[in-house]
Length: 120
Image 1 (cartoon, rainbow, N blue to C red):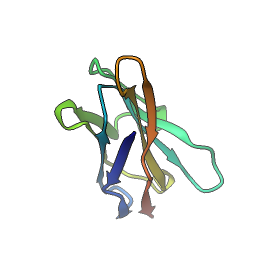
Image 2: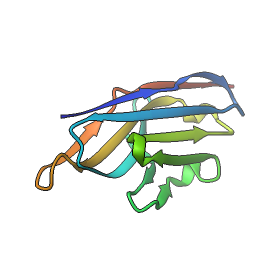
Image 3: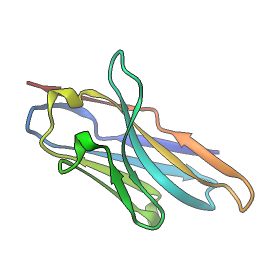
């Protein structure tokens, strides 16, 4: 079983910055994609950013140029640097990690979520 622990959320004024972290632990053979999602009240969960095992990154249009996703493979950790935050970025942010527990058994795990609140 793979556990994810998130940290770094909080309250910030519009235009400010926050950095989220998500560390994976447990029986891990390989990690493939490491993603960040968010869910605002009354809305569906949406993909914010993705980093692949090959180092590629993808971003939702609404965060391009403001957010940066990165990972340290040796630490099984993914980060989300959020700059120029807007009130509409207010949401619970979740990390999602997919990989292999062994050569035959895949896993997908979710973090517990961390609240990000941006005041105007």
